[in-house]
Length: 157
Image 1 (spheres, rainbow, N blue to C red):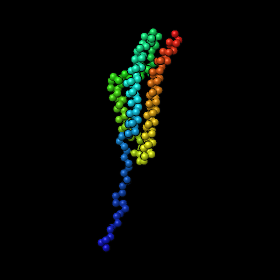
Image 2: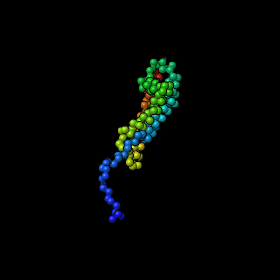
Image 3: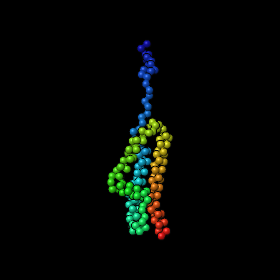
Image 4: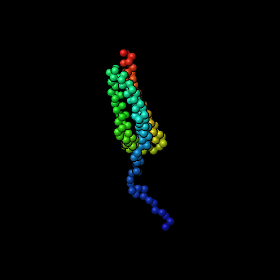
């Protein structure tokens, strides 16, 4: 009689199983944003000053032809100058950290399997590639418009 173990009731404390916790920081969002910001930094620090110097070298010709720069070029060059001289680099480089913390708020619960994690990484890399492509296209337009305009003015006169 003493050898018998009493059976436990099936539901002593009825409660819901814990839900998977949402991540606090998104590494794929951080990597993607770092890639975009690194591309922007490279253009603002290394390419924009050389293009600006090229335009300064053509200043006498530009004054003679009474040519003004397109608004997109002025905006881009002033943004690049702000990035280099003020704290623009600091503001831009805080974006990956901020987006890393904000991105999980807009996602569903933590991915449970490797396939959904890969899908999330691929999504963020696509977003980064599109952002880099659009930024570089903007750069080409901003730097190319004055050259095309200058060429047409020189050819026409």
